[in-house]
Length: 190
Image (cartoon, rainbow, N blue to C red; front, side, top):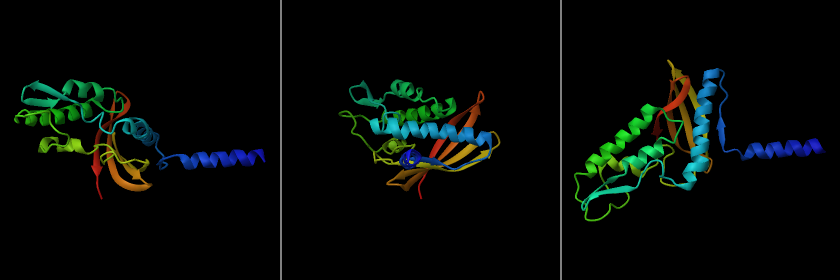
């Protein structure tokens, strides 16, 4: 009877898991899967529920009476705390925000910009770049495919809402100093 309860408890626990991944043979595949699992476990279960945009949309900085930009220093500090990302990916994210700020400087603002203002170079900020959406409750994710390209890996991750695929993330990983790091995340909408 005791074994029955132990087995029942294990089944209930395994059903409660919201992340799943396929089994792959290669040890390198498993390192890629581990990196992606750790990132999405952290992001979906911890960071995203606390603040949908904390790591992607920094506060505004007022440069003068009519000039606002996003606080690049604050953004860099936030991004640099994400150990899963390669330095190249962090630089790409910073460069993208620098481009947005450059376009924001061309506009004279009568007051602090409203969220979701319409500047093409900034529009990427209004949807979550890593799991899609704008604050929907993400139920979990599922690793669908791992592919090795030279020393890099491509991982397809399905982001789930109500246990259905909401969007797929195409995650690229690259090896730096014997560690796999996320080098890009691109959302693939079906």
